[in-house]
Length: 424
Image 1 (cartoon, rainbow, N blue to C red):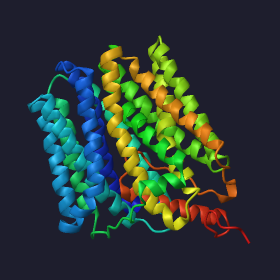
Image 2 (cartoon, rainbow, N blue to C red):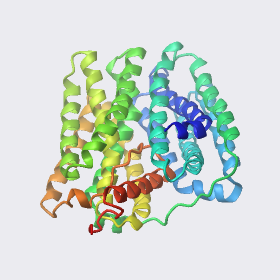
Image 3 (spheres, one colour):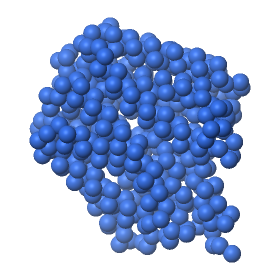
């Protein structure tokens, strides 16, 4: 781990600054939207636009890089993000905010592809897994720390928008000065969604619904807070509790997943997520609300990696990278729909619809998982692929790196044989 930090500390610092800027954006817009008089339905469109832009950007970043190169793509997209953050406060118009969120989502997808390509290139085969873990921790720390910065100025003023623009702007320096050459960029040919569904119906359905949970939770938490009447400090603490749960429970859940029937674990986690979401409706104290947020984030974030690992259990190692593109696309579709559904429900039924929606999606994944248990047997633990943590915000590069790490770890655990291969 020390070797990873010594080789890539500047790159990781730049990524940290990027994530602070992005973490500020999501929560701050939710708070500022209420100040500007935008209702929950309007803000749901604003929030959903980021995930649509991210989905489009993830699928097209490779073409941009192939045409003009990593450095130019990174500098251009990061500059557009920095400018868009200023436009938010200069022209607080919902239509313009939707367009800016669409642009920012597209740009962040490209920026992540470039940064993750450089990070992967700086790691060796022996340190790639450690680099991926550190990268995920840096992402989470950046987003969590961003919530604290929101409390240093009035969200009704312009200072916080300038601050998040500055964070993105200064992230250029450590990233661009720490890379010596442009890494190769190539993603695997995608498996069709039909092929992927036939391999793992639960993986596909679960990943799609989890996209709605993730974007609904992380995109609409601040909007929920304003609708619930929370103060700015309480909203930032609630948002931070969700991200903190995702960070702290990622590795314990991953450890368990490599030792039990993953389908049973998916069902148990989603039932727990549904229970805590329903509990959020009944929360009569802010402390209990924080506990619900922690638990929901602690289920939603690791569940993404768990569903990927479960899908891998039914794939040959040579197919895992191809499958990652389909899973990323399904998650993106769910992420676009999630905020829209929550916004409409909150507009119609009030703030508590936020938790009801999350509970419903969690419960549907659990019910579908129970039904799938009647359709085929689960693979034995010896036949399963290794769990590799990856954030739901990952680009195709990080997702494919996670697949490679999973294959390597599984081979090591099975005496050099890939998952699914018989031992001698």
